[in-house]
Image 1 (tube, rainbow over the protein chains, first blue to last red):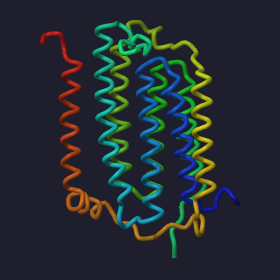
Image 2 (image 1 turned 120 degrees about the horizontal axis):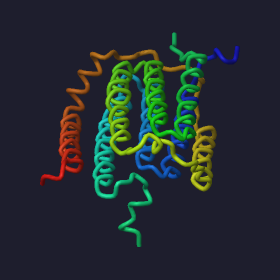
Image 3 (image 1 turned 135 degrees about the vertical axis):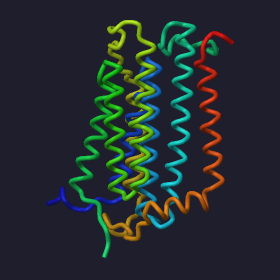
Length: 107
Length: 168
């Protein structure tokens, strides 16, 4: 019955670490800008799970982690909106969404 | 009397999130990847329910599963000229994989090593409901709430400005 036994905060931290590592891999390895933005969302999601789990297991009456997660969701929603608008603007100029096409600032 | 998180439910939900993330990164079709991201977001809402954060689960479904995935799908549709463009070439990115694996391993090791927990699985029982959440949000956190709405307004205007037409 080991599978039915209660889960501690360490399991949630481990889950969010694995999710964050997967998002990091996607953000660093993909060539499509839309895929990079989706991987960033995955990383933000992992952070939010971490915040909510730590708040629930340490001080649930304060709910500080939940409020931080709400504000983090606001920021990441703004980020994905601006990022996709940027992708559309660059697509209008270059007719591509490849991340290799964006290298004006390359030294 | 203490509350616990059921291990079987947690295992199912974590399998759904991690499996969805792996499928999102391993599929070569961008549209399929967007739908796998949607699946990950919905499973995360289930995790929030498990942590008795009902309002956050609702917001997660509304914001991520609702609007963000639609936004991503619209961008994919607007930036593809042919149907074949959705299929990406295979891009393993070995160095990025090694870096991410090292990072994840370090975090897992640190969590396992330095996390002191008196009794595993036991969490405090007092859980405020959504009404208490709302009272705190508009009481203690009123100023950050207003700043967040300002951030959203600026992001909205900026997104319209960047993606707007040629007529300026």
